[in-house]
Length: 82
Image (cartoon, rainbow, N blue to C red; front, side):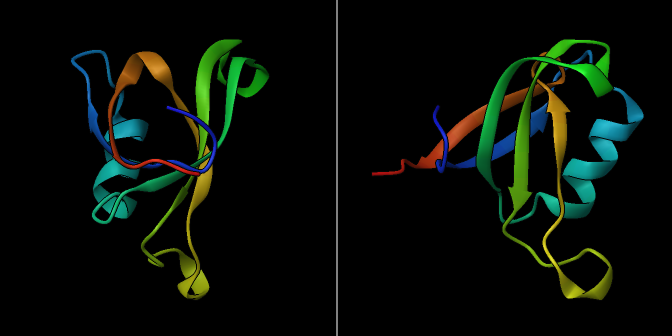
């Protein structure tokens, strides 16, 4: 998986409520990978992905954008970036 890939996500058994909610609220059409970071400060320095939703379900009809911890998600590449 690399930046700009279109991915589908599902929660792992370690997923917390926040992650499950984001996947349910914004993950229907998948996400675009914006950044892969080894240690994200806002997530207690855990590895995470910065994602942008394909769906426009956020307030104002915009895409959701945020970090999800790698240990809480399983990813499947839908289409690779070029």
